Length: 377
Picture 1 (cartoon, one colour):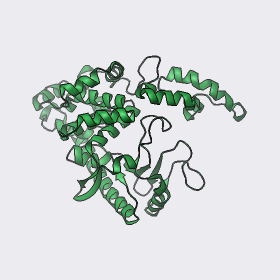
Picture 2 (picture 1 turned 180 degrees about the vertical axis):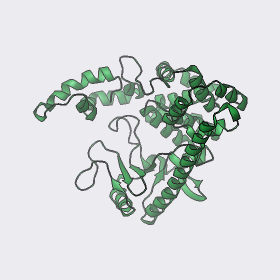
Picture 3 (picture 1 turned 30 degrees about the vertical axis):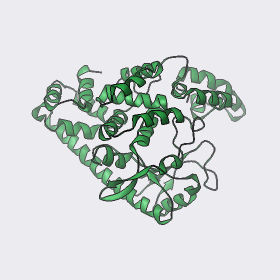
Picture 4 (picture 1 turned 135 degrees about the vertical axis):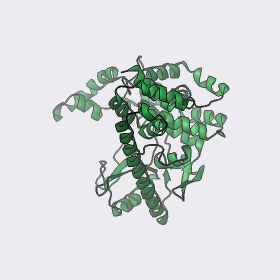
């Protein structure tokens, strides 16, 4: 990949970058199709549009028009998401169903101070598992169809902690979750609505008040999500950086203590290191030093950063798979003793198709696939 392309995108997301620097880099770009494609893959097209707005002739007119079109499409999509989120939350409230939105347009409104500043694909709402059937009924009445497999009575199958819904009439996508997971749901703590509800606050979204997670726990959720997906999109790194910059009151001692308590230390370390190194988020040196002292986190972070554009989502090398490197010692022991990590899943069955009488062989295949996959998925 061209150095100029990578350098432009890195500069676009850097906090300290100025218009002159961006203009100079834009003039050197010859393959704008690749720039737009990569920005789309990393979900930073709105940011690219905003930062290139003052570059004038350095950006071809046709590219400016494409960027504006994408920006307006994203604006419309986010406004529609905001309106739908408000309607769903009101419907849940009417039925006394506690619900907490996270990421998406709420994050845009709170951390970016502009709900249209970031791309938002679907709506994410956290609820209690005991409210799931009632919440599903409300969504079905609103035209949604559940596309996640479930038991006949609608209850989740073992290992499932989220339901995905789609509405055919307008393409709206909504996910109901009752558990936030760093890696596989069977590893680690049962972090759900009980974890965030007692520390809720309110945020303003499109002129209305909605429940919002406090910045400390939001930071964990963003780091969990990014780590779970190998930090393969710049948007997720920008989210962490923007949250840190917009929340100078962050209580780092509490954050670090909670990270160790919940087994989220390494996930947090990766998010903060990326936010500081790649975007330039301001983190106190005394805090940064504590994350930099984790040799494993630094090694994983360097691998991901080195492959961010060429092979995003690639597993770091080493004997211990990536997902296990994220877990703290207690969770590693718990996972190993449970032997759950050796149970075959869809990725194993996709790697090799076997007739049903031979499905027991997947237990033999899985260890070898894990060693070659390096992700422990």
